[in-house]
Image (cartoon, rainbow, N blue to C red; front, side):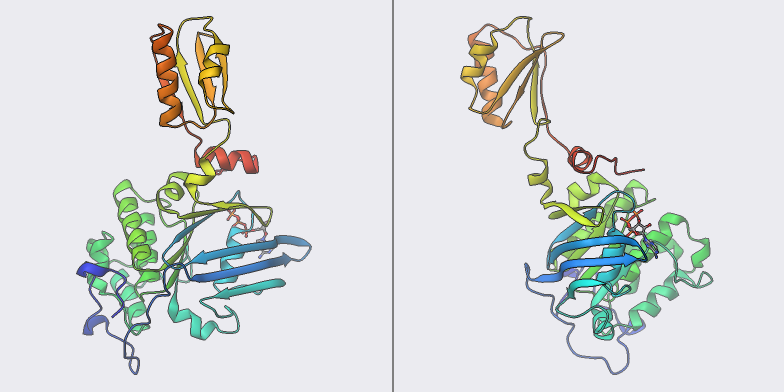
Length: 339
Ligand code: ATP
């Protein structure tokens, strides 16, 4: 049987949270890793005169985490809600698990998990009841008690939704999104407002979903979260994708990939440049700081260290500064992610 959480860490739901009547048989197998689970081509979505999404392409694959980043108003929510079937495209094609999210909504809903920021919840319901209710809507739910424990909600099972803290509501929303063992989940800022421990538990759960072949689409304002979790980062601005790649490849290259060392003033830059690989640059900055840019890696570090040794230079400091996703984002959009 397909397991979202192999190794028995979260067993299948038992009779307490059991399958909906008339829905038995094996849980649907997740798509093979790498299979597109979301395919968006040329998506256009307008609100009156405002074009919120302007010819956007996006592919998300099974067994991967895709982080969708963008400044406020970039079109992230509109794109994700279109994939979830809550909005109808004005132009372009959207397929989710091979289906049309609007026309095939009834078939799609049981197969996808959606974590919403808030809303749509009866605030007088108890957390445990809500999750059990959600579990009953699915043929092969996860074990509710195990999920509650895993997300650190053990003490809140009998607490009404309105009395949960913001972080507990967040974790409950995550639990509701995954309890039905979806093949694809949409997580909207899943760790906003969480303490470090809850954040880590959420990350672990996302990694587990990926391991099980689930496709995960994540919107986040945390760059470290995207760097930690995402196989693919999609940066959206003004309704278009302006970059899509792995965090590693997006961060590679650029002037911020820099090696700096402090020596003595007036070192022979010409000689240093000759020792460096083609395409490198070297400059002396105030304070006898030397900046070397190029393909910064172990080879360049070794070359600089060796050059220093040959020239009797003992660097006081030597450091490598890699471009972060935050730098990339700022460069591409001209905006800080938080605004
Ligand atoms: P944020 O990070 O602030 O949530 P976002 O990237 O999710 O932003 P969207 O919510 O998709 O962006 O909005 C894209 C654009 O469409 C914005 O200019 C927004 O004001 C506009 N917009 C979104 N929903 C509506 C609506 N229902 N009616 C009119 N305009 C809308």
